[in-house]
Length: 156
View 1 (tube, rainbow, N blue to C red):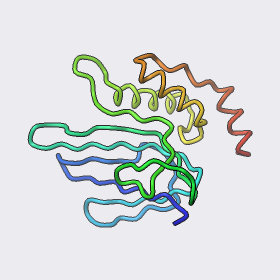
View 2: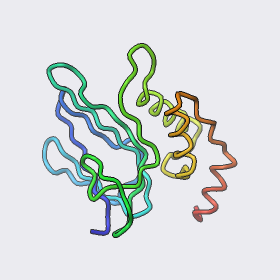
View 3: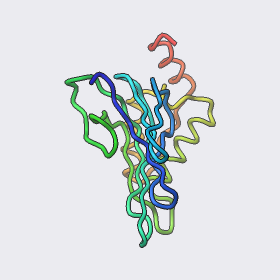
View 4: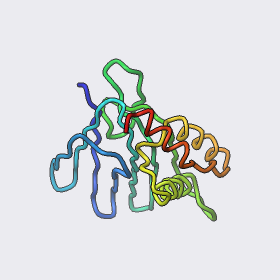
């Protein structure tokens, strides 16, 4: 398998997994509740998992991930096969203040509102942002200068 496969599940009121950003190579509707996305090695994407039961939210997490090549070290994650490189991972929610997932989603929204495509933001920024978010600090702003430097390095 030369790709990373991502399965998004949507069951009203029970599960809502979705792709936050990224440009998959392919998208396939498996059935009424599942969509499979395929990413080539090196592609970056954002993903969110949400599940609940009769007692409320049981699992809520989001991540910024990199698709891996065959034989490359990766991390096992729910519904991602064979796994992915994790640049940023946040789970849980705040009781009286925004929790890790809310802060991560706000950061992604801020990056998009600045006109940047999150999948083109370098892994080094996402990893630094992950440390800041874990320490309950605001990640530094991602700058247009960094973005354009990354685009040049990618030949975009």
